[in-house]
Image 1: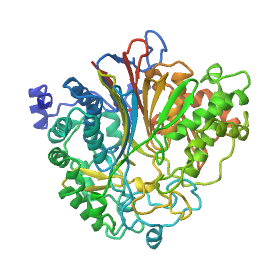
Image 2: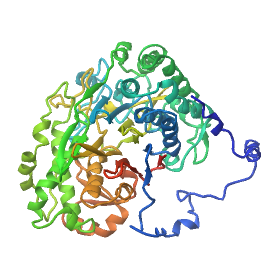
Image 3: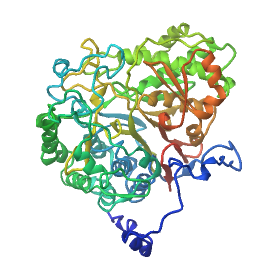
Image 4: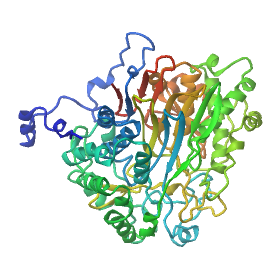
Length: 609
């Protein structure tokens, strides 16, 4: 496969030479994050020439293949793979690898991944769970000895766990997942699909605007790095060396290189998943863990494997919706949709979500109340199904939704169980791909928090994720930490079919907003008639279950916030940061044309050919 290195050379050699000589030339471009703000920040947005005037851009339409994700270089890497004979699975692997280079706070080989894959020749969906398992020695008893116990104020996932650091690290599943899905369904190998990421990691890339804003390392170490008690108070020096430039986070447009990650990807090209779970990378992970008081062993890594699982499913107004099953939270989106379908006619007789519409406060009130009901079940039952029974069939039944209708006052916000200190954040990438043969992929890959645990593996360009931070230290919980167990997982991806034919992928990242956000964008499309891009552009809410707070994007808060506050909701106006990022592809049932949207809240794009 021809290298893409020629794209990485400087387009204007004279200017590059001047820049390397520290020329005083400066760009006129300024950021609204600066103080004082440049004058353009007082401008108002212009209108489109037709349609919904505030839609941020058009859908991308293509016949032969399409990729949608949160960073343009990654989307283009996936598209390049499609053009060179790869399929949707190959494109997804290449895109995820590239995102590990260009959006490293959210994804990398040291994290988790899930995928829903539609194989056209079989007209069948496959779901892959490549989430990590707790290391040997990870027990409630050991955590108690280190000073960590259940937080009585947090009845949700993460109760009592530290915010980051080595005790939150589980065995990374991402590389196993990349290798597994490509071996089963791909047309290419790591030799081809990892090469674009290797080229950019070695030669550098300009950091994009939103990603530069997010590029801040967390504190991943306690005062005494070898003692994991009282974490976390300071930044890991290996993380600074890997991710910062001269000790500082890169700014928008600055070139970042990661030769360590290029080295890791070259090892994977040579040895596949064994190059990560056995050998020098595994040894480096265990060495770093041991140095910080962790308990991960070489055997934990060598024995790791993901699972092919059966998607969770329900119907919604004639559409079949498929999402990830436990321990992922995605299935809660289906319960939300069930509740809306069954209960809205009772809560608002003679009305539908479409007739109410997104300018009506009651539309949002009923949606938020449906979310609360579903998340009560999510927090009560979601756990590793290999360790606990999750009654998914009952929870996703219409009868169960019917039984919940009476718990909602159509005119007044319900109060969730009191609590505080809940962890609901999360930083993730999602992507969608489709190819000329009709194969489609909904993919989610994550380090959980921004830069995961805050711990880097020196020499390999890898951050270890902190997904174990979503275990609970309540020994009676189905989600209690235990060796080789998977924690509650916020990662979500979905797929929609109608009349046994594919309609669309649906992916949306961002901690606990994922399931509730997927429900919102699906209603935007299936009930309100929005196109895939408009569905993304529409304002969203994010409700946090334990503190019972309701975040609304600022324009939505200005429209309905006061009315919802009067109904008893604890409303907070916010920008788009908490609302995650949506990436989706629809296949038009009449023409077979792909239509894709990419969230304006991120740096990305949809690209096709």
